[in-house]
Image 1 (cartoon, rainbow, N blue to C red):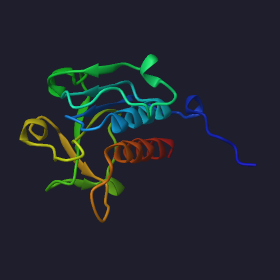
Image 2 (cartoon, rainbow, N blue to C red):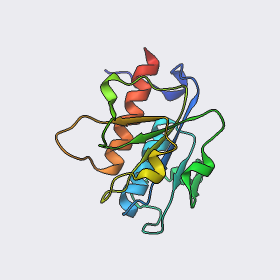
Image 3 (tube, helix red, strand yellow):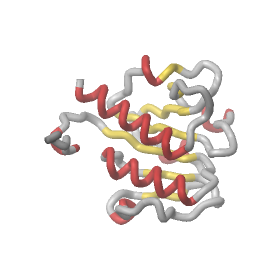
Image 4 (cartoon, rainbow, N blue to C red):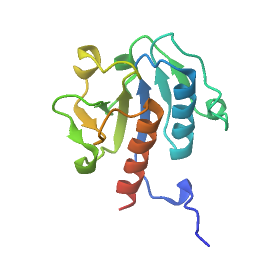
Length: 154
C-alpha cells in the first residue's frame, strides 16, 4: 500500500503565494484555492471582478487561508519575496529548468488573456509550463506548486 506524503513532513522552506490577474471564472478561482490549500501556499490574491469564490474549493480552504481581493498585485508582494510571472510569454524559462526561490509570489494570467506589461514589469522571473498549448488556469497553479514541492524535497 502506498504511503501518503503529509505536507508537514516535507522539509519545505520559505513560502509560496499565488496571484491571479483578473481571472474569468469562479470554477478556476475555487480550484486554484484548492491547490493553495493542498500544497500549503500562504495566500491567494485576485484582481478583477469577473468572478466569485468557486464551488470547486470543496474543502473550503478560504476559511483557513487568506483569500484577498486586491486592485494591484504588486502592492501586496511580500517583503523579500520574488514575484514570478507564469505565462506563455517571450523570454519565459521552462518550469523544467527553473529553480524556485525560497519565497515566491507566482502570478498567473486570466484564462482568456495573457499577463501584460503591468504585471511583467515588476516580476523578477518569468516561467512557463512547457505544453503544446495553453493550460487551464487552475491546472497551471497545481503544476507549478507541485513542481515546487518536488524540487524542494530534493
